[in-house]
Length: 599
Image (cartoon, rainbow, N blue to C red):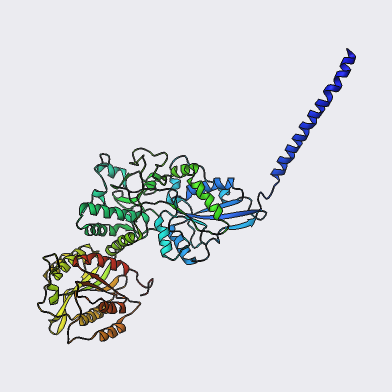
């Protein structure tokens, strides 16, 4: 038995010792490998630092998504700056066409900071919409910085504007990562009083009404994509209410809204302040209502009859340098399921209109999908903004009407004469101008005031208290039978009067409405007129002449020579009914005042 036992031990020990040795070796190798990995500094050969400029309303969730990406991508540092889109646009335009991409850098890992900014101050994950995502609390605005590696403005409109400013490194279209509809925000008490819960309250009764129950605060459409979206809505409402004269209806609404337009540095209009200011409707976004960014009071959202062009948050990669791969990785993270959840928890919708997460009851927020509308084309958008600019601007204008014999000709297909239809268009335009605009009216033919070919009908003065008088005086103008046209003498006299009475802070202009060329044998020549105008023009005190030519007898080259001498324009129309749109478009184009602009 003892021998059997002795013989048995050698069979066990080698196996046991081999197993123990193997475990020790493997364990030691594993421990050594773990220790070696923990000592691998740096973790990569080069580090890439990426700068992202994001609109304040989307910067907080983008910062959170970037933090998570940087934790996964050990060689990538990401800084997300909350920056107003207008500031980024200025930086891009200033540095065009070069300089983009300089913000992203690669540095040896041994020299890189051990903790990137995106990891040093992580945002707490969002679980529901909160005020932390409101534009006013999104983060510091960085002005005058170098161009970012990627830009995330609130709207594709900013990409268009950047390219129009010469920043052709900006793509015409980005990749939408989120959205939020344009809505009207009302104090919940006002909304309840006006019938919000039974759906009797809508944009038609608030925005388009001649006497709305609440004042409407509109962000300036010229600088705010939210305001521009509302402008599209105003036009749609006018087309529905006045299909035969939608332009007039839209312009009338614009003029009513103009005095309460907010000139903004941010994306959402400021809360009205002062006694009774909760009694106002503010054009803003669904996200702002959710996050309490409009006034801090409980608000409800009133949606337009159909979706409007709204913030679509286009992601645009700008760098062509070492940060491009990182910028692409961030875009993928924003579009991924986890990224989309973070964005919708901050009051935003998905690019296709999917709802935010955690919508509270009692605020009117639509819980279903809300498909966004497409932006108008650039030509259409410009025409709409020009129409807005025309009714929003105060001017000092001398309007000169041709009452010579040819203005008595019938307009084809109408019982109206050229003059009567021109007067109707002018009367409609006078109703739409701001009350602070100063307007005077002359008429001209030949020998209307002794030997003078022109005479004053209404002296220059504010329209506001004289609107009815101006409309009435326009209606009293008559054609002079067989009268000739003293166009040159009248134009020179009007220009002298306008330059002598030039008013700062306004568009100073002369408007001449005529159907023909100068045929006054006793008047000055065109060459004399151009020479006289050349001596009167002062580029620091511009007074452009706008000629609106009516009918087929117009000599456009003659008028262009005169207009060009003053920095003005010529517009031709077969029907005088087209005068109003021409005028407001031109008024918007003349709206750049010195010293900012030189003509």
